[in-house]
Every structure is written in structure tokens, then in C-alpha cells.
Amino acid sequence: MNDLLQQLIAGMRQGGPDFSGDPLKARADFEDLLASMPVSEDLTFSEIELGGVRTLHSPTSPANKGALLYFHGGAFAAGSARGYRGLAADLGRAAGVQTFSVDYRLAPEEPFPAAVEDATAAYRALLDQGVDHRRIVFGGDSAGGGLAVSALVKLRDDQVPLPAAAVLLSPWVDLACASVTMTSKADADPSLTAAGLQAMARVYLAGTDATHPLASPVHADLSGLPPLMIQVGSAEILLGDAVKLAERAGTAGTSVRLDIWPEMIHVWQAFAFLLEEGRVAIEEAGQFLRRSVKARGK
Image 1 (tube, helix red, strand yellow):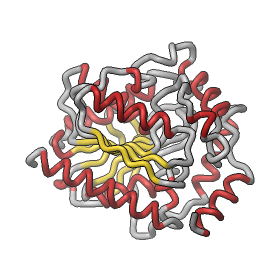
Image 2 (tube, rainbow, N blue to C red):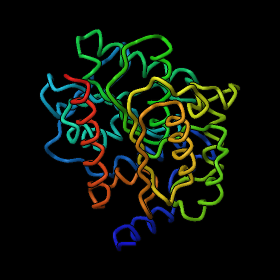
Image 3 (cartoon, one colour):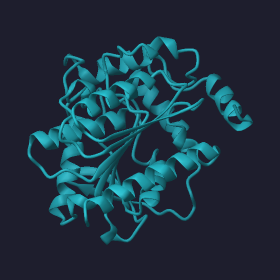
Image 4 (cartoon, helix red, strand yellow):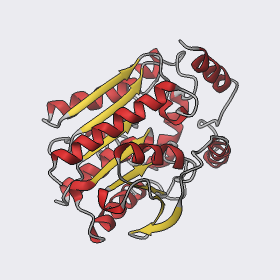
């Protein structure tokens, strides 16, 4: 393990947002943490609406090159497009498309299925604006990675033309938190706990069954989806979610690439300003999205 990663992990172990407690306090603490992370000075952002959903736009490529629709993490109760603007725009730039980061509604004020409704509304708005679906790609991390899959399933079921591909960074796709790595990787993961995720799942689900396919897409029919790329670290309690999602998607006949990065922690790509592994992962994800758009013939 390199020195920078060790230092990062040590800092994270000193304390962070407590997702097992008050969700509103966790949201505020998490936003403070996100605000401390540097963003490339050459990036610009503007607030817009897509389908009535607040969205942060960054012109990371000419408009005719396509669009990345990005869904941030935060366990469905925290996080924001602004807080994740650097990661989203870095991925959009690597993919060679404009970046649209969705500020979907959060629990507990707006529980499931509000996030799925916002994700699909934003995508439909891009289509209504004339953006070719073959030039649109999805991205998301943690809860946002799960949301990206849920949105794809909902759009497929509604017979809406699907985007070219999706990149999922450490996706949370099983809100039942049933994966064996929830316990086997507990000591290795410096940022997430099973108790925290279970608490946030209850807040988001608000009584909905945790195996509902649009809440926990690992339980959905994953056939007919565009190609997926999953990046996950070996030091994550969500490792099992990623592996199960890849297995389910592949079994359903969906093209899926699963990359398990040794020693990497939850959404290490967000620390690309510090970690070479983060920069490499973003570049590889961007190249995957570029190839997927090219393969669609537009």
C-alpha cells in the first residue's frame, strides 16, 4: 500500500459523517467534507433544470459530443451535485462529453421512489432537447451507482431508448445489505459501516421492501441494459454488491466489465487529486464510455 493511500485511510479513520445516526446531521457533516475537496480550476459549472430536476452542468466537451448524466453518492440521504462536481466533471471530460450532475431529491424528506423519478425525468429531458440517446452515458457512485442501474431498469420497462453505457463506481445495489463483505470487509473499509448503510436504507425505503427491484436493482431483471462497467475496491464492504451485480447482469445477457482494484477504498476515484489510482480509474472509465458511444455508431 502506497504512503498517500495509507495517509488517506488514517485520516478517514479519525472520523467522518455518522450515517447510523440523525440523517440530517449526517447530510450536513458530509457536505462539509465534500466542500473540503479540491476541484480543477479550469472547470466551470452552471445550475440548470432537466425535467424539473435541479442539475449542475459543466461544459467538459463540445455540446454535440454527447452527455454524461451523473448521479452522486451519499446513501440517498446526503450528497449533492455540487459536492461531487469535481468527480462528475472529471469523468465527463475523460469520456469526451458534457457533464450533467443530477441533484435528485433526498430522504427522509423525499423517500423512494423520488430519486428514481428524478433520474428518469432528467434523462427524458435530455432526449426532449434533442440529445441522441446513443450519445448519452450514465455514471454514478455508491448510492448513485445503484440509482443509475435503477433508472436504466425503469427506462427499459417504459420502453424509452436507453443510453450507450453506464459506469458504476462502488455501487450500492442491495439495500438489504445482505452481502457477506458487509462483515468480512468491515475492518478494511475506513468510510462505510453496515450499521450506517442499514440505517440509511430504512430512511430511504420508508417501509418499502428492501428487495424492491427499483430500490435494490441487484434484484431486478437486468436483461436488455446497455454495457456496464463496475469499478470497486477490494477494501470495501460494498465489494459483494459489485460482484453480485456483475454476476446478475452477465447471467441476464448484459455486457458487463467488473474491475476489482486491490487495496482501494470506497469511491477512491473522488481522491484523484491525491491518488494516481484514482486518476487511472477515471481515465479507464472514460475510455470505456468513449468506446461504447462509438460502438453505437454516432
